[in-house]
Length: 249
Image 1 (cartoon, one colour):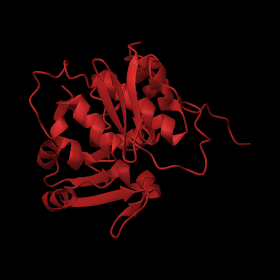
Image 2 (cartoon, rainbow, N blue to C red; image 1 turned 45 degrees about the vertical axis):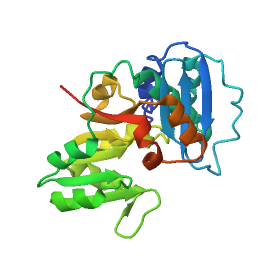
Image 3 (tube, rainbow, N blue to C red; image 1 turned 135 degrees about the horizontal axis):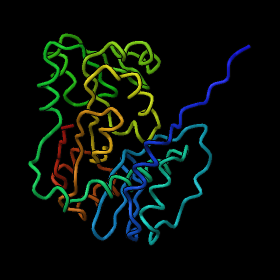
Image 4 (cartoon, rainbow, N blue to C red; image 1 turned 60 degrees about the vertical axis):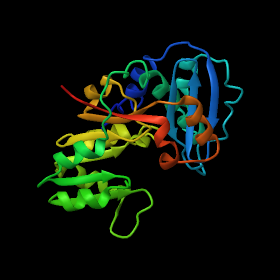
């Protein structure tokens, strides 16, 4: 007889992040083609918009302006792609406050990652503009993708290969699509960086197995919102944000 086991609480990380959000009224919500954005009077957060799936149900969350930020953050545990992205954008708004990082040195996670990968077996969850640089600097590089390109490995390979890697960089959008908790379990032997505009800059992430966080804070919230609304990407809004990197003490 197969023994019953209690499944892990996949949403524990999300619940801890939601607890960091307050009830400040939301002023703007944008579910853009590439990015989703949530904005209050004092905060702006981003999350990559997820592609619609055959499952996940129809979104029923509309008319979100004026609602408490924490209520939108609750959407992060939704299995609906649109809702999950908005929920993570709300969490990033709470965690990536411009005022909190006003004195922080601007730092791109790519530079720290390049220092860490020398002579190491490296894994990237997702494609990044500097993938070839990582390949040249590391001993070996494996790229895992939901939609593999030539030379990539499919998502299923993560289960077998991540435990044997030295350095793993994970796109912040892994929070929105619910893959991050399992990825962190699999990469428990590696130095792990969570990177990209979808990354919440919360030291709470260090308690879950992340060693470095690289995300962004709004420099010009109005410009950022305009670019997201018009379907722009990182290249278009890079001057409207500051890139910040935090390392586990």
